[in-house]
Figure 1 (tube, helix red, strand yellow):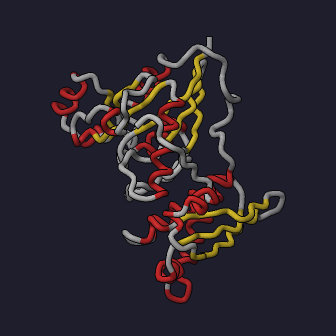
Figure 2 (cartoon, helix red, strand yellow):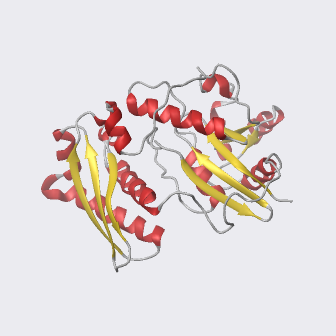
Length: 291
């Protein structure tokens, strides 16, 4: 009998949720950045092996929202917790045993799905520290090196319901390549910009023309102010050219064929605080009924 189900990866910002999804799936789907809050929407990865299929949801970091974008991010994380058959509650092993998930997510009651507490970055701990944390029932892994991942998959798989596969065995995601192209452009901007501007950057794919070589992609990076646009473009267009060149290589590696990236920068004032702008970029907001 096959087992299949939704595995939601949840936790505070910057604990390695995206790296864990990429490691389990075996391919880079979720963008990775040292800057917190880089994951804004849920990213779906599918791991199928033998008679097991895990539909893994990488979610935005759990935080107390201060504006509309963060409220949308929190709503996305809460929906993923409600949808889950199994929850991987990821935390930083170097910070010790984390607070309960219900407290970290500010929930009125614990989630209905079973929760596995997973401590990432275990490769940074001493042997004694690892043994102590394991004795408390935690699962220790290193998403960066792959240590402990096979054991985590085995433990998680045993908790999935007995059911036919939800998707064909050769699929690795349910999301369109346009979504990943936009994320790769935004990841590149995160890598090349300073501390303030990245949080004001959104990416929209206006055109994705396949059926030709090279594949043609027109993307727009949106910022909130003219001063941010000037930083993103750089002197004589140097910064935006650099972002475009690096992003093109990433997208080519992802789609496996040559592509031409037509990259633009536009200002959409205060988009992070605008419900209509967030809807335009595909972010969903909802009332939190479980608070």
